[in-house]
Length: 365
Ligand code: DAR
Image (cartoon, rainbow, N blue to C red; front, side, top):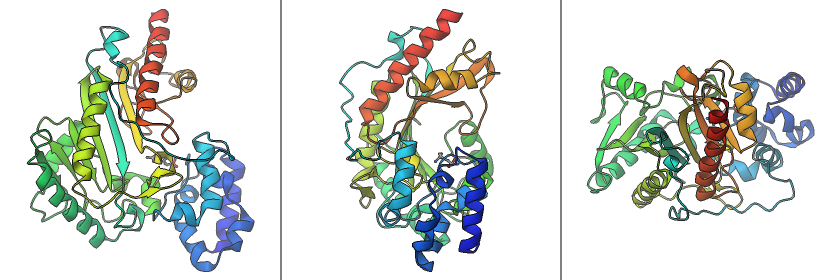
């Protein structure tokens, strides 16, 4: 696309898709002020939002430095999404002190004792470009480096496990049937080449080469390799104790971080992710809960989304991003804020928000 075509396309999207933050904050004068090299770099970053006008953010960084290099456009988008004032100073802080207060769902209701919970952080190492700018060779080199770290981690008594690769010819290569069963178990990530947003950004390039997952023996600590970010490090549990879940992630992250090159960080935005929605903590904490009364048995999630937003929560279907509610109104609930809050703020927001939604649900029953 020529620079002229980019400007026309973005301005057309802005008129029709008010939720596309890339189009909302694209400035023709700024874009035209860039030299052709920088225009090409910024075009690669925003192409996903042009090819997918229904995008929410509409961009993915290609290198950690992009957030500084293209700050005049990206910073307003980031502040808009994360509801941070244009004048506020950004300084990401972290707090993993899981002993602050009890966040056990059974204290809300004893029936919330077997809840599917997951908390993950996105991390990118500073020695590789971000996924959208990686070559096939870099995807495989990154996976080889991560696999060496996992070989050491597998000796850790608390996180011992194994690495499952999707790279053909890899020593850890898994079969298609095992891949499918791990996807069905919500452990392995889905076929990235089926995601138009990732495809437009080049993040799914060379799928499935250089992709795989590390899984602890008890399958409650997992690391996705080569998905939307270099690493998605997560803890998963089926009970109600958010403190234990966050503690598992915190300890696993600490053990893994010692085995890898430094993670990419930004002075303003904390942990660097390729999608600006994941900056700061890089954390998404979620749980699945049935809310048949608040969702008209799964047929109306819109009302719940509006009510949940008042508590700082986002609602998705239980099948992941862009999925519908499941049987009995099964939905995925997660805090919206990730930047400018701490990890413990997120745990508290999830616990307190679910308490309020559960109170509303049971009042209607
Ligand atoms: N389709 C992208 C996704 C934004 C948030 N989700 C992520 N990063 N997985 C959009 O801009 O809508």
